[in-house]
Length: 115
Image 1 (tube, rainbow, N blue to C red):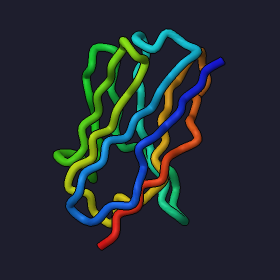
Image 2: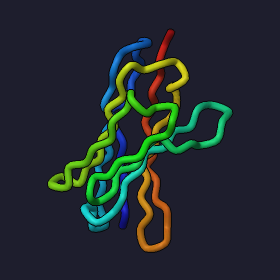
Image 3: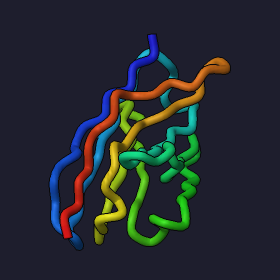
């Protein structure tokens, strides 16, 4: 079955960097777009970034220029490099894939940015 496992979340200070990872299994990873979403306390889950099979990347306006999404198909892992973090980036970050008509989510990893 499809499994997505995020890691790398931490408590950091404003301006610092983090790299999140999402290890995927249960589907042909190289052929599918992978996305990152985040959900802050009391707010709806929102799109952060997506990388397609050909590594075309898209970003939300709020992270463009600060975050970079990447993938390593050899190890079925998608990454989110987050630079110049701000308190507004505080959220649980989720990995997502759409496979055979269904959306799959990981358990999430907490990122907290202190001011």
